[in-house]
Length: 535
Image 1 (tube, rainbow, N blue to C red):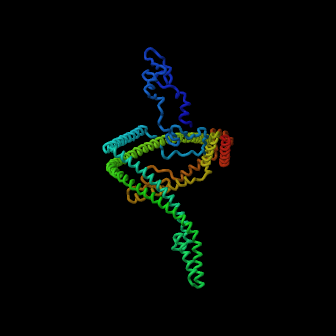
Image 2 (cartoon, rainbow, N blue to C red; image 1 turned 135 degrees about the vertical axis):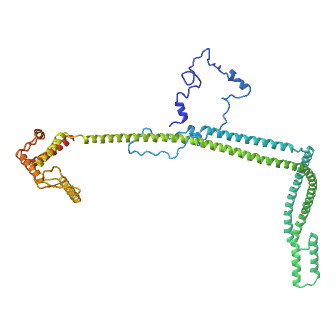
């Protein structure tokens, strides 16, 4: 399916101007008349026929020039998908057969959300956010009042004094740092000379500090050597001491040169230390004055801190209100996303259901057509099966002739009694015996009179005309059978029926059984021929 924008571009009416009247949707084909005609705005005119330059003169922007501050829609959002995203495409040209597997309809139907409910909820959230914004603005105003009410004016003289003192302290510290640097340099030189001094002193015996001390010691030891009587060991020891004192003389001379330098450096270092001490006193005095000024300022700062603490509490309330506003807008975005998600899913599901129902309808029509075809075929088969045999008349004639021949056989006594006739005869005999027993009982009781016939010797109970006995009836039947045997005549209509089935009629009673077999064979042949013709 095409995106919504593409559909609008493809729609010829979407580009038409809006308005009333006329055949077109835009109404621009409506004729302009003197009465009721639509007034034409002059070119370059704004609202109320005022020139657009009026907005520019006032420094305002027209609606067309006003920037759109709305953030662009996220392409991953449901709102963008609903407005510009593509929908799933369902193949409309798919061929459906009876064996095609049709997908099932969705078990849960996604209802289209109501626009009224959406607008109502969005409006409520906007009102809630607006109220929270008003609360935040009121808190900001309250914080501003706290700052203004707790404002403490600073003394300019104190600030000037503190500034001057800070500047003096800075300068004195710079001068002190200069002396510190010079002192460090002198200390480094002194360390070098002290190392030389220690090195020279290692070659000089103890208790000899000057060149004169060495010379006097050498002179005294020589005099002792010359004037005293000593052993050879003592002489060697004394000569060794004189020799070591002579060797120490160069180191003593060098030490004599180093010592004035060391003393000079120590004197300079003392001067620098004295200067540093003076600067320390001056700086401490200035810092005391600065501390007093700071204490006075801290008292004011304490008041500022109290005000700041109150303002911080209000700021916390403002932050909480801002968080609530953010939560409301987040809830609004989530609700909007859910709304457009349901709209999108509803449209997709409607298209899917329409597609599935179309496939189901095609398959149902195919099934109905197949069932109708099967029904027509079955009906045709039933009609074919229900068609009467073309030789039905001949078959019925055969049945009639077989019954006729059986009747003739019965008349001529060629057929024994059937099971039905035997059963009827037994039933009749039983009824007769029961009646005879009942009559005998009534005679004994005297309720009936017994009469005797003189002609045939048959007892008649109850008086009246008597019936012929069995002997006379049997004689009559025998006479009729002999008469029929003597004259075997067939009805002319039966002869015509024999001619219809192409079977010769019987001429004697003994041919009846064979003719019945021929008639059965002819009837079977007629049925077979009729079925072959029906097929």
